Image (cartoon, rainbow, N blue to C red; front, side, top):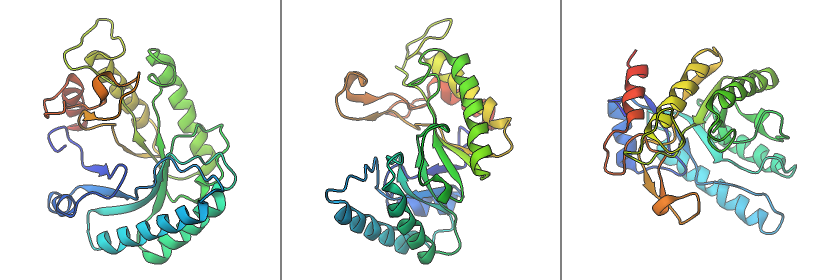
Length: 256
């Protein structure tokens, strides 16, 4: 991460080990510390039990990590189903708990909802964290169109909430050694062009205060028609930490 010029990361999507947090302290990385609440769906069946477990996980996270100088923000969840109205009271409880446990740090959660979607809880955040894959899951293969939509979406989000914004995930699956000119999806050239395009758009928005690429390294995942070899290939490094073209492109952009 230091080689590419990065200075921060989010603990996606669960607390990281204590040695990792110690290392972030020593190296001066800024950390958004996240609970293991992923894809919350807020269905009434068992909701009270899940809410109690979520609260306990938050209490344990803050108790363990509150004295780490690297921790700059608490993230309560990743990609919850916030289009459901019942998400609002659940998040109101969690934000109140987080702020009672630590009065010194901002609190957020990470949303993948579009600006025009119904979101019943995002206004509770001190900082808006957004996962965006324009040019990949949306506007697939149409990078110019995707970047246009990304720019408009960022403007809409800021117009609505007037908070600092972090793009907390952006990226493209990339098979190591696969190339095409002009760039095509799954090639190293497409990933590099996508990341550079996103960074160019974000750098033009003064309210965007952070950018986290998904992902640092390729990693094993479950089988799916979207997962060649049961791998997530969105890493800018391979699983054994060899840089793809995108890692070199990030280094050139971020070292400036």
